[in-house]
Amino acid sequence: MLKGFRDFILRGNVVDLAVAVIIGAAFAAITNSLVTDIINPFIAAVVGKPDFSAIVWHVHLFHKAGAAGAPDANAGVIQVGKFLNNVISFLLNAAVVYFVIVLPVSKLLARLNKAEPAPPSTKTCPQCLSEIPLAAKRCKFCTEPVAV
Image (cartoon, rainbow, N blue to C red):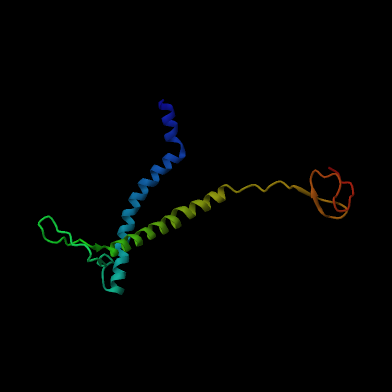
């Protein structure tokens, strides 16, 4: 029973997935810091706001009361700016993962797993120089007998 579980865990896919999840979680913190500490100051220099989180859309159709009976401050507020910040963070994550991990690994695997050239499936007729199948006994173009 435990042998099957051990074989399942030690198969390449499960271990690779576990490593990817752990590295992805750690990498998300780095990318979020990149967005908040490096990119957002540039946005603030151009736009005048430190990030997009201040962009909200107020929908005045809802007037829910809070716990104390006062109107809830967040009722009918759609946080568009926070969504934009998350989209920027996701796009940066995806770009870095692709250009730093996926692209180099795929090029390395392509270099390591170069396919051998396929064996020839045709031969040349000595009389008319046409391409004919290897198993042909006669050329289909000039009908000359050919050595097999």
